[in-house]
Image (cartoon, rainbow, N blue to C red; front, side, top):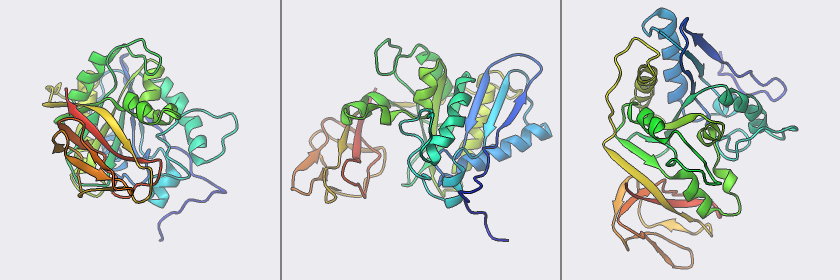
Length: 308
């Protein structure tokens, strides 16, 4: 039997699997394959679902909703996106124009009915897993938030060493004409009163990535007191904040070497060079984050982060 393919005339439904304990508690949402070429989330979620059904994971209170594959079109194509990046400019649409807007019309109401979100991702390059959390508590116009301490405790319980913050304000500064393009599942969740983290589990094809994702699912349930597993101790040992994004202006803009996320740089060290010959250097001692080896004009070339 051949592998299934996406049929635009009969797109597959979004599968939601929900378990509700008989005692009240938090409502946790766990997502996989927001980007279709990131298989660790679906693999780990399906394993966790089987474990809840079989009793290996015992749900004591609250409710957990699993969505193994959020973006079915992208998943069946094994591509990052169906028509565009679902995790940018996430919103509902009265008249959806593409696959991702149709998905968003199901996803956004789902986000609003939960208290916490664990969004499972992976990345193309090689590197260590890390968790993305949101801003400090604030009442500003960009990303007002009041659950920073609780969200960072959630992030620290997932089993990875590195916590990264500063996404939306850095993105908005780098792309001032399109700040809402930085809004994905976690930003949408925070705006509507919940807490949310993105776990980057490692390389797309690394067999360890689904294990990282599965451990995080169990740790999340235990952290919120929803399962019989022991509560995990905080595991984050390194806290980093994004401070600046460098945007590609020309197809000839390029990195000076094959950087990996979390490679260290010193202030003034060349990171990339523009097609014009202009050197783009690190503005401070810190780390290269999300280096883009094949940028298109208007896309991010790399980010710089510093220790918090």
